[in-house]
Image 1 (tube, rainbow, N blue to C red):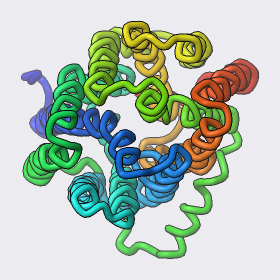
Image 2: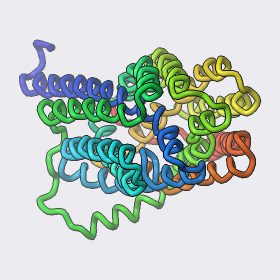
Image 3: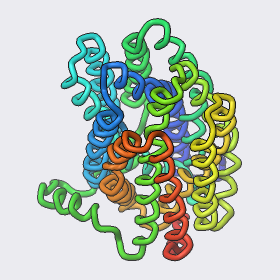
Length: 410
């Protein structure tokens, strides 16, 4: 602490540092279980007899990127700006626990209803995304936003260096159901840490909540703010394009090239290692550079990556390609978060994240289902070609219609 600072300011800065530590630690633990989930989810559903279109349909409804994810985020952001960040981060953990428990039961009983409900519960865990992003931004100075968001990504990706390979090994030898109790236990630790140590950064700013205001906020979420229309369309188009191709990659590799779950885990681990190594330097670069140029660069990496996945079949080449994918993700995720942070006032920040994620989700939620249909029609290359074309279109939108943020709050 700076001895020259007033005690109240010292206390506030210490709270920020404590919150950033807890956010980083919980992101690490959550990254451990979500990276394993990302590897086993698609093979798990396929092992129960699902077709690729069915898998895509379930992902479009629930999971961690479907229509449920889309609908809960604007409401979560709107309420988080009014009653605080922490309650929604707690609710997110509870949704994760319910989802993992239901998926484990679905695997034991082979009951499809439980798979759908469990997937919906996991989608509902996104309720906290706007609150978590806002709390991250509120834990650092304005000129450090890019680094702070990058730190969160490093924390989330670091356990993925080892966890997916171990999870794939466990699934191949003891079955998919054996993995879910481990994922459940990790999220229990997250819940305890958040409940006990995370401190609220935003006190309630109005005495009563009007349900009609919340519904108006939800409706408003699907209409991009005029100054950010180009940015919203680019982010939504990116999610749609990558949802068709990359969103079904592990399922396609299982069904077409017969990669084992352990091999999928290795792919995920290599990607996580590369992503974690790149993220902090990328974050510091974003702090100093124009955001639009970074977004264009990130999107331009998509077409060559798709060409590799379309033309190659060897496992070793897919492993090497994960490094290119890691660079794509390491540049795109923090730069879009920094862009929206710099474009709105602090008191509107959580709602802004919710609005962006809602618009992105409503555009992108059919992508996995359409990708499954394309796969059924044209094999693995069809959804990847669609992904490639989408990346080219998004690049054009970024170049022609996106400007640097007008407002930058320090």
